[in-house]
Image 1: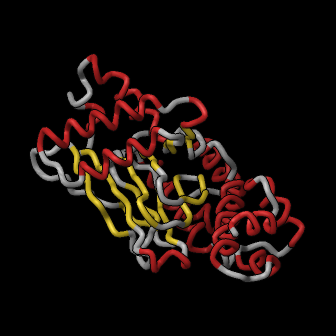
Image 2: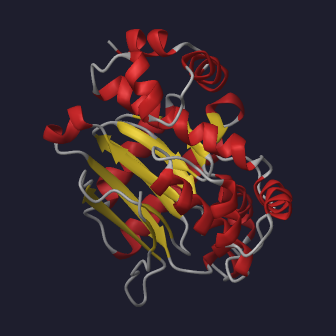
Length: 285
């Protein structure tokens, strides 16, 4: 899978922009950008990747992302004919350090945004109210759109506890300007491009000019998981997509996602997905 660093255009004299976008199944790529993003899926389903987290998404999914976290919404083959769409709100760069949230009434919103560096999936009945407001905001301008955004923030703050899921594992990655973030993104790209052919620790280490032992310590420090734990999660994510999209036998999927031992594949699939491959496929029907 290709990795790209995007430059999001927020028009001059705008603090944010809300748009309805077609999700192109043929150009879904792992990417990151310097902007906060609020993403609402209105139609379509597939695989969501946020940092080191891999799971499925469907209509109604609502995710808030902080700057510079790698992410991708892949569209299922079976959903390509349903014209998958999302409504995306992007904020201008460095908004968190600006005066945008610098009033007492928005202090809690600023705190929520700071927690989005791992990606937040909002759940529960209040998300439908958020979705309704976002759909209206697409056609609003100026002050009316800003008022709509305040309504969205007010609703998001009310979604708490188990209805707020943090997606990626905590990371000690520094600010976007630090070279470490580029290093880790380079490793992520290598894994996605080579997951089916085979992952070589020495090759991954060379990408960041380290010996394998130093590289393993570095990756664990920066992502709070070992390199091989990350590789396993990517492989199981690919397997989950193949189970959902195809009728291929579990044995074939095992090998296509990089495993050469069915017992190991079944074991790690259940550890990560909380069910066996066969149970996962059965639950999708």
